[in-house]
Length: 269
Image (cartoon, rainbow, N blue to C red; front, side, top):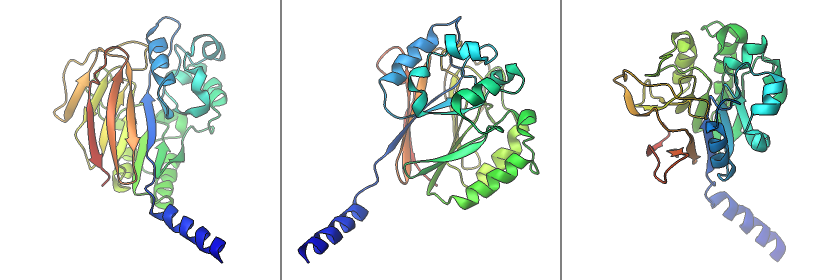
């Protein structure tokens, strides 16, 4: 009787206990045998616990098997990495090396749970993914996925940014995916492709980040969009997101210096 009471009390206390926060470390445009910036970010990630989101272009120049073997400096934490495919992965034609290395589904889009958050990984290489339009297989999958996972908070990431002040700029081809994310009340969207850090004010309810700062190189930001809230085109680093059951905070961690470039917090919508 006492044992049963104790077991019931333990279960009740477990339900009342707060859900621990989860950590996501994100950056894209990472490794190259021609740069040492990625070794610096690798050292930063190695000493920072959390799931690692590679936002595409994991290794340059063509994402070959040999480049993963010789140049991919983030290999030490592959077991905690969840990757999106970038355009350089398709330098081999079908991204076969990256898909095998990271054990990805063939189309490159999938989802997973991180603590209390639902996380969606998109393939923004639209032609190779079978399209990004409103009637594309990926968009149909995305709508189903968001309906089937009614988490309080949701985050998505891919390689190409819907909004960016960088050299590549905002990508209109993924606008249908963005509309689906907005309709599904997604809270945060991460991307790379442009080699700088940028945070935007919420657009359609979504706060988005460009984190192309994994170490390959820097691109200058020449003309900022009006919705750009913070930008840095000189620092390599990673974005650390602390994901709580109903809120999140962000901190861009540069590889040099002790002060983060950008910090903040918000509640899920």
